[in-house]
Length: 65
Image (cartoon, rainbow, N blue to C red):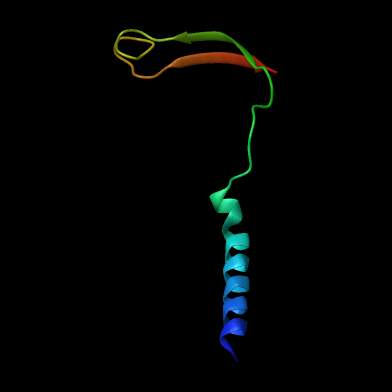
């Protein structure tokens, strides 16, 4: 095999690897699905709880698109 053939095969091999790695190097663009509106209540006190002696959150949200 001469030098030119080896060079061309190396170029083809590199091109195939770049084609394989392209999705990781150039991820597909993404966008939001649309406008979203949420209503409801999140009730917490200064300690991050709904009651002074009990930890936790009271979350009641309704989201629509």
